[in-house]
Image: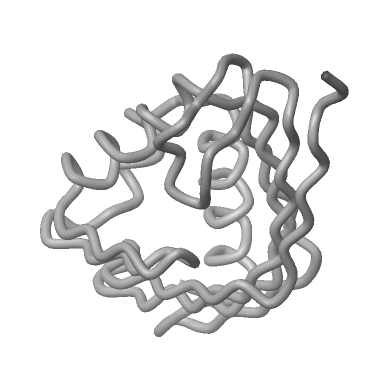
Length: 136
């Protein structure tokens, strides 16, 4: 698979994530996929990742923007911007309590390891976090 093919699939994966199309998202994962997200939470397997992000999506509208990325047949490196907008009070939100209308903007670097053209390991680290609290 060429770098261009890998990047095209990665962009489609991010678009599916933004739509909340978890069937399309998990089609990009190996069965034993491992994710360590920017908050340090470790999730193993498609179901664990989907369960986690369904909860995030239930509390917030989340969008991911690819700032910059590069790839080869072994992996992807990406600089990502994410924004979470709380659609309801979320006292147990993974990054900290959110009230309806709060916004959390996160910039992160992520490394995606590929196996057989699918995402096998994802590691993310946050390098910028900005809270915008809703007006009371």
